[in-house]
Length: 300
Length: 295
Image (cartoon, rainbow over the protein chains, first blue to last red):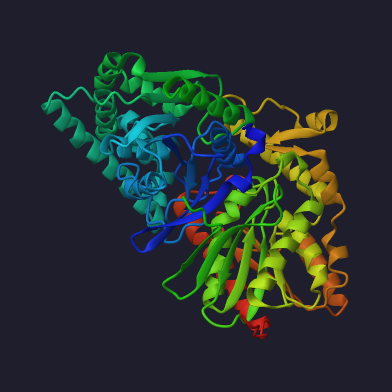
């Protein structure tokens, strides 16, 4: 079946219950019985995102993978897109794994044995968390994955006292503190810095080889997947700011894990632009092609 | 495995939502029907914007549809062919096909609640679609959110957004340093990860909303979200001309510091900033729609 032949006739909507809410998903099904491994597409996390993603890259991906015989599901997180509920907050360190599990449950009940998760941005963190806990996940392909505890904390980690004095102690900035919202922002920034300092001190005490701004749970999840022999693709564009974080994180414990993994973990940084958010047609095509080639290698 | 072509559920508020693909094979469009608890007091088709604006407005349309359903309206949302989950090649997107899809959505809604009275709401380019589709229902309510009034102005806006996007990107952007030149030479240009074709742009040139509104006798709401808090001149001029013709038109400006179609603000600001426009639209539709339709 060619990719062009796969269209909405091969698709059907599914509403899955998660607590009191409904996740709205679109399942793309091949002609005939699907392959034993299904695929879940996780979008990046943002209120303005939807499961078809920018320029409907997720739709193209799903239909191309269905042409190769895979059953594929894409969905909106609760509070996003067509799903019900309200988005409370996207906490990158507490990703919505229950929602992904509901989708995996549905796919397995529909006849697949296991799943591969393809995810971008915050979805990548969610995918890792799910994969580390769920043995039904047998492969993970990630695009522009954030490795920091929080992006804001990553930035804050780079600031020295001179930055705070330079930026924060100017009369114009101090005048801004009369505004309640600005005061809140300032206090939030100070809080982040304090947390980071404390975390750094604790990690130094424990002789941790992870910088304070690196997400320990993410590194642990990767380690778990390596132990379980689960293939992993990590892709960044060369211009992705998140790539720099990943490269720095590799200098520590993460680097050791990746070395031991050998070719189980493939890191692709060949794309010359920005992958995060799929801001260009080239980025969209590149990620789609990368993932398909990786699937061909890992799931022959 | 049994594939159900419709996903349906009842919300805690008592309203029902039905998700399905509409239309003929190979030309299917994705649609969501929102149904009230009892008989519908009105029916409304929501015509979305396209490109990045579709993503910017998506959740606002979902919340609007759900709120209207709770107030007794039946609402149909849909994705044009070539966009969202629907069939079709994005490069063939144009005003005629978009209008056809709106009429398909209207037919679905009409069947769902057994009514001939269908109103339309359109945002940006969706405003052109709504105005054209509404020609079949000239006495019904029509809501236009930040409608595109001029294809030329819209294209300029697209090119500006492209250049701003290119500046924001560290890799220098999409490569089309002069989008206007690229568009003239090649008949297509990439704008923020979407392909915009001459077919699409030329089709917009054929869709002057004022012409489409010529025969519209029903109430019209022209709304704008603006950081300035003032209605732009083009909208006030249009409103004035329609008012001079004794047409029922109201205008609404919602102050929104996070307003902007191409580079939306942070998660929290855009989530809260959507509510005033949604609330005002619901209030207006509730006030202007008194017909109870059967289900």
